[in-house]
Image (tube, rainbow, N blue to C red; front, top):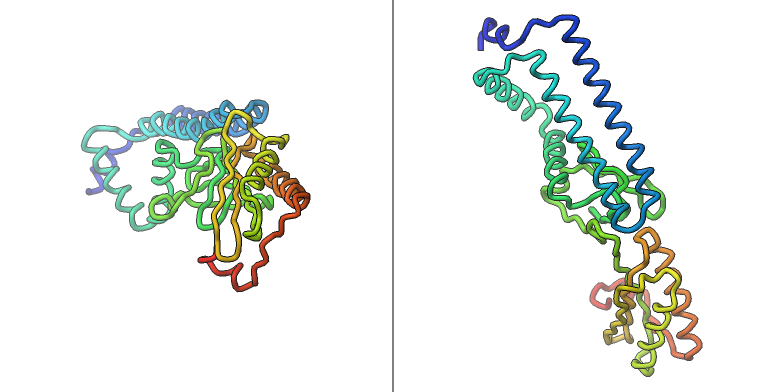
Length: 272
């Protein structure tokens, strides 16, 4: 592309053009800022699925605003003929491909994530061993907050090759699992009944979903697991602590013996 062709790509830039472009940018920034402030504020006053749906609108609105702003601004400066468009896309693609490969990969993954929805604000996800609630979905990365109140930024690029574990997947139901390890010499039917009663009497329990107690015999004893759902995913740790504390108390009153594992057995994956 010679100099004359490059010049023909662009329109004449006037003060009015610059002011219009600046106004569009400012309005876009304002709309994105308002969506990031008002929608989470509204979501905190809603419950269950309505809260998650409102939070999921934040990244969608941001993408729509940015795309609309670009569609408005670019024609102000560029003569968008078919030939010009192809030339610009080719040059931009070549430059981006070499200079910003990883960054652009995360941006493209973010666009894919906005439509495939592997995670949304309000979801509880685990990526590379890091577990937490998605608080913000940006263009390049997501922001999650761990149970220890640590903010972690994860690039969307993980979407291409990494495993993403989503505990509630946009819904208001998140299964919690609480384990107990008992000596094998006991009445399994009675223990199972007691643990189910412990779950059913929890103040955090979501009553319209099933409570299941499963058990598995191991060489060192019997492994019991309570599977149940809290009313809100954000209550999962209070729920699990409540089940653990009251479950231990109920089992002690039954005078059953807890399994005793050596440190070697506890660290052996085959003994889980």
